[in-house]
Length: 268
Image (tube, rainbow, N blue to C red):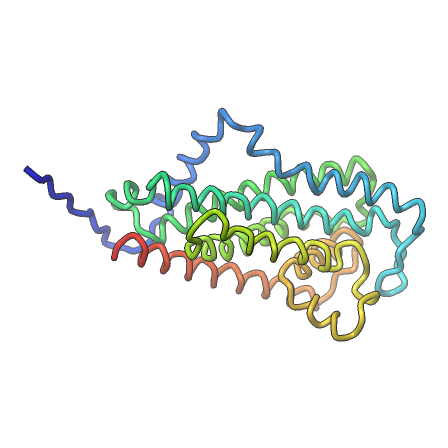
């Protein structure tokens, strides 16, 4: 006899409580694998200690807007913090989501409950940005210990890093739903590495040729770096709202497409 399973359809398409159940599940899974959880924090830290501290002796100070001069280490530190938030969010929203979707078939089981595709998208993205938040807070503590913070505005770097994590987690999860095999993740690596190197992370925007400056300013990591650098150096202005708006739009668009793609893959 064949058992027929019918899905429980909730009255509303999204519930914060249902989404948080996915976050709770991830927490229970990672509590015994915390070394894997924190591993992504070290790559940007090693860049800061090797490139920032080492080259700072050779380059001297970097002059920013309004003639403000900072050490090279203080210049790249917020960029490494932004990269740390990006790395933490990206890892969970890509590799882990792909495994759960294609191999573990976790979401097939989850959707047999009242949880909806939008709940899954929001829950996984929330967990990914929480990982990015952990990286960002740890990195901020390192910056304080190394005396790389010049302004009280720097306290806003933590919520700004959460915004960066949200934007990248949402878009990366949406992109992951299109992945067919593990080899497709080469496209993510191919996108993230140039963005990491050429988003004004290691050099001021003014050092790039004019046309390339426009390309750099279109990349999402540039807006994250510019946002954190403005807070750590105290160069805060109305123009920073552009960076916030860019990342917010990127995040909400990613959530929309991730939930729609999950609905199409799992419910049709």
